[in-house]
Image (cartoon, rainbow, N blue to C red; front, side, top):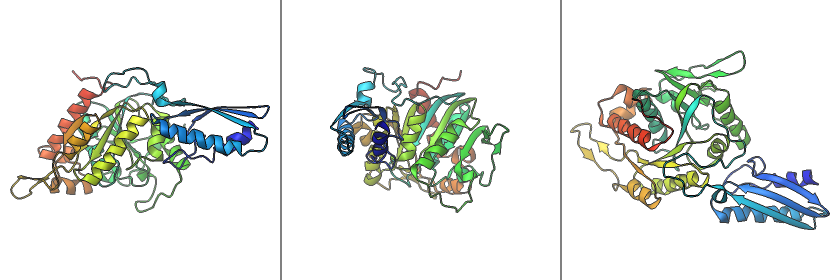
Length: 360
C-alpha cells in the first residue's frame, strides 16, 4: 500500500512548478497500518499557506484510495527548520534539502536571477564574473538558462566544444581564466530546447557534479527568468551562498523582481540584494545622463523587501553592441561608466558575501 500511496503523491504538483512533491524530495516518510496512512512532509517554504495547501491535497488524494480509512499528514516547513535569528548576509542557514551537497572545490555559489526576462540578467552575470576575476578571484560561470543560453554569445565563445575526460567529466571552456559551461555548447545555435522539468533537473545536476570546476573561489550561476524548476532544482542540490536579483526601473520589472526576491527567501537563500540595470542612458553624443524611467524604483523595492540595494548600472549603446559581438564591457571597455559600475558591484558583493574571502 505504501507504494500505491507514493504513486498517487507523484500526481501532486508543488504550487507554481511542474514537478511533483515526490521528485522534489518533499515526501519524507509513508507508513500504512490497519487502514491508517501516515505521511511526513517537508515543504521547502516559509509560507504556511502553501504548505497547508499541499497537505490538504495529499490528504484528499490519499483518502480516495481503496482501503484507506484515515490519513494523518505531518508537515514541517523551512521556517520551522531554520536556526533562530541568523545574522544578515550570512550563509549559516541549515539545508532545507536532504540531498543538498557542496560542489567539490568550489568555495562560494552566487545565483543571479530576475523575475522577468529582458532586464539584462546575463549581462550582469557575465560582467560581474569578469569584475570578480579582475579582483583576483578564481571564477566560473554556469549558464543555467537552459531555454535561452546567451553566455557563450556574450563571452565570444559560440561554437566552443568542451572536452570529455576518460571518466566522463566535462572540461569547461576557459575564457581568460574564467571557467564556463552552457547547454549552448552542446546544441546548434538556433535549436530550441523543448524539455520538461525532470530533464532540465538532470542537466543542472550534471553541470554541478560532472564539470571540472575546481579550484574556484566563486561560481556565478546565471538562472533563467522567473521562479521555475531550474531555480528550485539548483537550491535543492547545492547550498547557494547568495542571490542577486536583477531588475530595470519599470514597474512591471520591479513587480517580478519582488517575486524573484521572495523566491530566494522562501527556499532559504540569503538575498545579497537587488541591482537596477539599464537604470539610465549615457547619451552617445554628449555623454550626459538621461533617465528613461522613473528613477530609484529598485531602491524602493529593496527597502520594501528589507534587503540591500546594490546600486545602478547605466545603459551605454556601445557597450550593448559589444555584448552582442562577444565583447563584454568589463573586458573591452574598462574605462566606460558601465564597466566602472560593474567593478563597484563586484566590490559590494565581496563585502556582503561571507564566503568570499578578501584578497590581500
